[in-house]
Length: 337
Image (tube, rainbow, N blue to C red; front, side, top):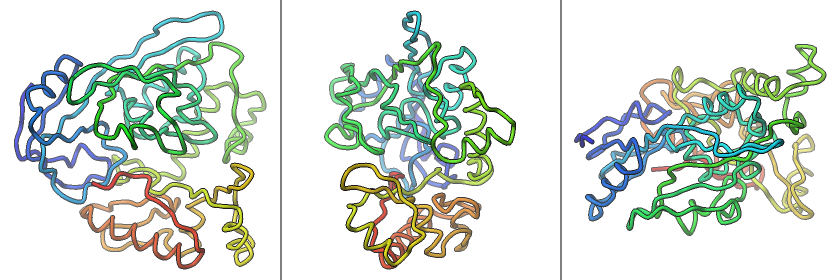
């Protein structure tokens, strides 16, 4: 373990923002992580995973601890299911593909989501009709102040829409070290109901899709809409799709008859934030090196040398305009640092 000082984080965040860490160290196993947390317990710490769900608006005046725990394995299996563990530093998409190679199903709809395995329970990541809460059995997390390992069950994670206990009452108290998922070995539940999956499959004349077919369709859709962070700095969807009271939706819908929605409960409706942002006139707009992607209005991008503050300012202007035009507030999904 080597601690480096005044360390550039440009290659450690998918926005490609230039920001400096006061100091930086990498943990490659739980023993190293425990040692770092113990030896630096009186210092300000910043836990860094894949850097895919954050916007750095300033330098980090702390010891940045990069979680780079690798490894994946089958814990147990029966005739129908398999319990697979992924360590926190595993790239999520590579983990999905590894499972698909073995015909393990349940996470194929979340192909190509940026980030690492350790982040998945924090955000309850999801896409195309699937969320982590659907397959996650448990996760292990190290308590920062005592270095003790605690196992959180699915229920204990208190999952909501892009929400979990780790964003609320347990925030900044734990470092997730591994996650266990229960996946199917046969009789896979093929989910093509969300988004353009059926249309993508139809292009290839696939009428009885496998889990690999679904994954390929999701990858094709995402690549057609979303920029590769290695080529154009971004953090995927910057905003959450707002869930609003039915009365608020009906009021906005009365003025905007083409407003799409999804019913999520008896009294609540989800409205696509991308549609709101596009209708507010921001899709494809560029403000210096900060901008809104031309194909997906949910994605804010760094065209090269944008600062985090410039991207943050753009996000606030989008929120202000959408609220003014539709009366609907939208929240950032990305963590603002």
